[in-house]
Image (tube, rainbow, N blue to C red):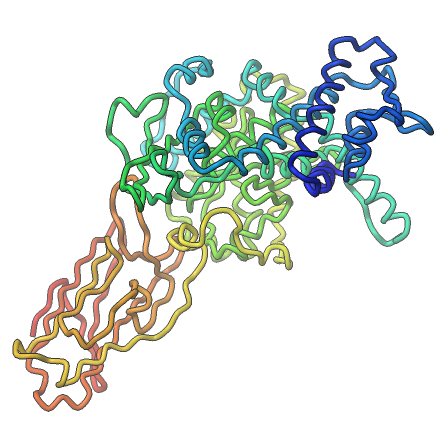
Length: 580
């Protein structure tokens, strides 16, 4: 039985039964760890009242003993002398942590508020105890192109995964023995299935199964996703307000989000840490924190792993499968493995650049994540392809300068095999069509990863709507995402930008939290976007004498905006501010 199923079964008992079972199991584990050579401690009699009533009588109780390392006999449970003490300790820690999470969910609201307040972020004193800065060589940037400079920065930052102290600390937090146990169960199931179905080609190893277990453990037990913080003052719901500039808050990070409570209107800070020592303590964040920490976990397992950056605002990890001789896409936020086309197919992302970084290499892996390479090439405008290739080769050579000749040769062969893989466009399957699960619907919508339902809206301006002022004014405020209308008869309640539009394609409302900006923009990677509003003046007896159109926009680099007004008979291209 896997760990998830075991905890699910154990959770079917009453809270008091669970708490007492965990207490007894912890005591058994502690006794063994204190005196591992004592055979009496390693033997549990089934007739013992405590063992019988508080463990064996519970759903999942016997499985807990077996997972800890005990073997069931006719009258007792015994733990072999060669059982790993590390596995005993790891199972005890997971069991206690799981039980504590249950207890926290049942504490009174007032007490939960106090706990939430204490857990908002580590204090300066506690962080100082955590911080053990990774000494990296100074970064000397050589490129003027902003995109290539970002590549240099990421290539430099991934060197932190090679710090022995950091990896050692991370390794201690991973329940390796339990992951290996569950991975073996997975592998046995696959092998049994392959024996029944001779046509089933099985080319996986224990490492591949452990990767799946690590993803599951990281997602379900270790890390927590954060959209908005719980209010540290009243425990209420908050919403992002702005980025802090308070130097007292900007400790150990340059980015602090302030989330304002919808009830008490107080602010709760959300530090966006990048220091891995702190993230191993806080264990929360969004995709940046998740991928950063998960990549460290993979390196702590001594796997070849890469930190992967997609230029349209997402990051994940790649792990090299020794058996399959290829890189596996791993997204810890989604608990998915080897589904690289999910971003393009399921999330509606327009892939342009996807770069993978490790201490030994930098690789353009864009082609693994798209099923339409020609369209991708049209979107790649950050620099010339030759410039990008030269930069990647130069950075790679610097990284491999101190490596042995045999290691260089191995990496070169592996890289060539990967390039050959990119020559063939893969087609999406059913799994790739799945949408994103991490983050709220509103958060995904602001990133353009899901689309709101398009309903055509027509603004009807008839004579009975026009008052003594003889005018009707319709405005849209992008920062508040709402319309304003001077005609009371026209209902605009709850109308956001899209519900007030007649049609739109390849555009969305983007919120730049860091820069305090909101605007309607073209989706990244699309050649063009369109947005249309429609006014119906009907049989207006008073006639339409004038129309003022004020349309404000900004373009960057080679961007262009065309504003056109059309009637049934003709269309006119308008300047930025037009009146007739």
